[in-house]
Length: 269
Image: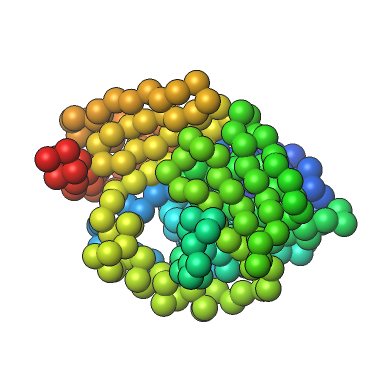
């Protein structure tokens, strides 16, 4: 376990203290988001990993890849638990706030209890918050982005207006990783799943969210949107490596670019 912790901390570039505290949680959360991107490339390369901790950790830590919520938050929970944090998986549902029957389990978040409070940690939301949010009613500004935490039937975690998703509802009861398996299979195989229909990568920054959707690269934030097209394979591969930190040596970036180009062309058409 000590080797895993050292390798994980090296993966995210964290050189500070690790004793459980709200400040350390914040530092780890930011470091993770700065180095491990949200991406769904394996879905399109027929290389989806099973939903088990060892395989996920191998992907994120040893292979230095990104992933999506089930993978990234599971991996982060393993790191936090190994460091002595009180952390549990939490069932969430990405939805509109007034949606009457949300699809519970289409998102996985984390609840961390430290320094006498409970925090929502989420390194698996590409447009999400850089710092964990306290699980209490209030609005929280993070680098010009405004987030909301509100008690609903469960909890409502509202995203900022510069993203593509409104937010998610969250349950406090601890969840088991196996309970997400049916949704993991759906998200990675169903033609109706956005992860099957779209090829994407995201990374939140203090003043913008960087999104690669197909071959369109956008930076969205309070200052507006900056957009560019990655028309060549060389441009696409360079952005993956330089802007998202994706290791491209063992990744079929040419195939990914062809898929991305076809999706973008179909959408525009």
